[in-house]
Amino acid sequence: MTKKDLVFTLGLCLLMGVIWAVGEIVMGLWLAVIPSAHVFWLIGIVVVTLAVNIWHSMKEDESDISDPKREKYERKVNKRKK
Image 1 (cartoon, rainbow, N blue to C red):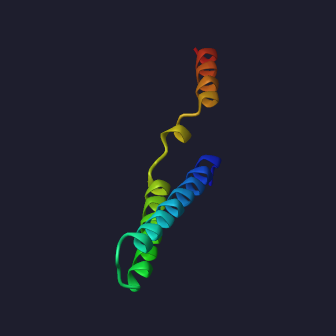
Image 2 (image 1 turned 120 degrees about the vertical axis):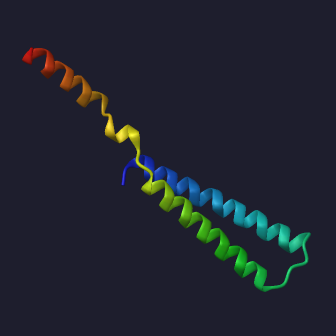
Image 3 (image 1 turned 120 degrees about the horizontal axis):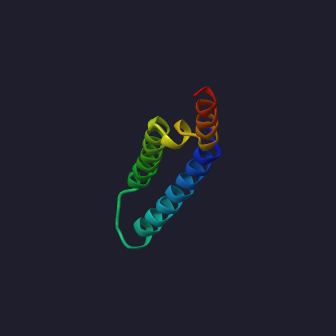
């Protein structure tokens, strides 16, 4: 796991925590919902967070494939071979 992945995961968890808290406040103050709606809201937030995190980890990151230092080294080696 790279630093970028860790920052994404922590940021996603923080964002989803804020969305969950706002949803709980809205359901508690303005919307009349059944008590089990709070449980479904929590389960929904957790499932969406996991889905987004898994999607992000499966997505191929192009920046890891093309390393600028490695490309510079390859160019230098190719010049010497010619």
